[in-house]
Length: 223
Length: 286
Ligand SMILES: Nc1ncnc2c1ncn2[C@@H]1O[C@H](COP(=O)(O)OP(=O)(O)O)[C@@H](O)[C@H]1O
Ligand SMILES: [Mg+2]
Image (cartoon, rainbow over all chains, first blue to last red; front, side, top):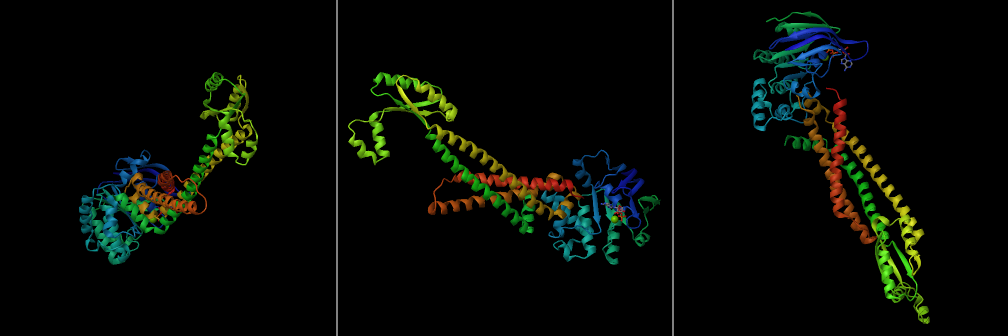
């Protein structure tokens, strides 16, 4: 489903953000990508949703190859991939409902369908009661739930989470992690980048460790 | 529907920027509008002057009727001649008296009419230039019975030069104003695009196509441009009303200004948005 074939990534001369990455991630897996800051975790995720293209090697996602995908096809790949970030990336001038609906509006989903889907996903992540609130009225954990709802509302086959709990208190962190677990249980693959190893102990899963752009450990599928 | 809502919302949210864009478009179009009005009036004057372009062929005295008819036929048969109008001695005198009333008494003192009869020769559209006129005048002058041919050579030469120069200048100015407008407007709109980069980033992230991302901006640009154009037309109209009552009267092409500027404003807004959004999407990260 996702495959890295001898991938190298260079942003600036003489510095490999990633080097010699070979990797397969199957449908429905739960994978942690860990490593110190600057190890290349975000770069790895960006290659998956084709925000970046490898300097050398090939990344294949859901049948789309990084070396052959056309610019016009990228939006269609992205519709199948959910992404969440440490800083949530919600629109400040839209309330919770509108933020989630936005992801469907921009891909031309009919209005009736939007309402149905948004209400359903808001219930799933447990934020329905705040659907009229604006981002600044929410805690970090709640904002991340909204971001997750926005990612899930398009029924992606995979959810990419780049340090999703970096800005969230311990209580919120537990809730988010629980949520990601449930999402995975219902069949969506999850790849979560983090440098907080304590999270992993509570819910051990496949772990890929990066250091200076190289994979130094891959535990393989574990459940 | 979504696009319209997003466009209006975007404008409301960034209303200061939207207002600046509107203002810039207004200013550009105002210049363009003044230019258009000036051009219309200029060409009105030129056309009026060109209407007056004619050749006068003075005839010998006491030509028989048949001879005059024959001369008329020959002149009208020439290439570039539209019409030859006969002016008799009496008519010439009347005209002269009308044009120069002070000469009345002087003429009355004379027993005979000193003015010759003549043909006023109207020239066709493509022939109102010094070379063609000279050619025609020469051919007329050799006709038997024609005494002298006049056509204000110097004056026509000058008019021709002025027209060519003004036309070139006018076109150049129009092009410069248009390009400057597009440039200024697209730069202003780029600021409104940058102000919404978060929204663009998220649209890209969730898989909106480029067309979908651009659409609200293009619509926004068109609304701002159209509003700017309408407003400019309105202000120019008021200015015209004010000036033509108090200072000088001039021609104001109301429809051309209204539709032209509104349409041009819309195009300007569209192009400005297009340029800046494309640039941003190409250069921007995420
Ligand atoms: N846009 C960029 N331009 C230049 N260098 C970058 C860019 N993004 C990341 N890098 C570099 O690539 C390396 C990996 O970065 P990143 O993938 O963000 O690491 P992580 O997410 O593990 O902290 C770092 O050395 C970082 O400085
Ligand atoms: Mg990172």
